[in-house]
Length: 157
Image 1 (cartoon, rainbow, N blue to C red):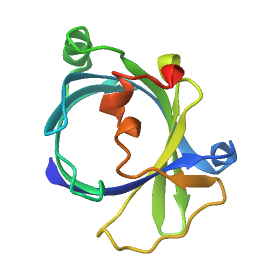
Image 2: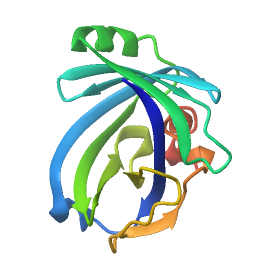
Image 3: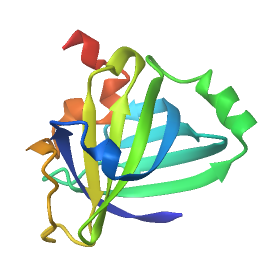
Image 4: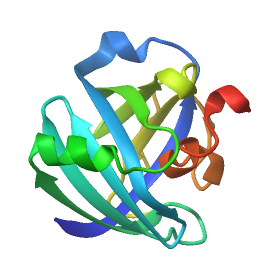
C-alpha cells in the first residue's frame, strides 16, 4: 500500500495512555537500510510480517512517502537477521482521542524508558485534540526516528 504519511510525534509524560488504550501489540523491527533518503524496514507485529519503504521527510518532518506490504512472518524473521545495528522492540498502544487515533510506542531493550506518541493526519495543518499525557513535540527531530534509534539507542543519550 502506497501513500503519503502525514504525522506528528510527541514525547509522553505519563502512563495514563495505558488506561485509555483500545489495543496493545508487540512489535519487533529492524532496518535493512537507514539512509535518510530511503529507509527499508522489516517489522513483525504479533504474528504478521511487514516490509516498508519510506522516503525522505519534507522540511517540517511531517510528511513522507510510505509503501508497505505484508509478508509471511517467517520471511520477516529471516530478514530481521540481516538488519543493521540494534533491533527495536516496543509495545504499541492505540488510543482513540477526539477524532484521532494516537499510537503510543513504549520502547523496550536498548531504548527502554523512551515513550513517544504519533498521530496521523489528513493534512499538515490539521487541528487535533491533545490528550493530557502528550508532552514536548519532537516531529522532525531525527534522533527520534525509529531508523536512528536503531543506530543510536536511547540508553546512550
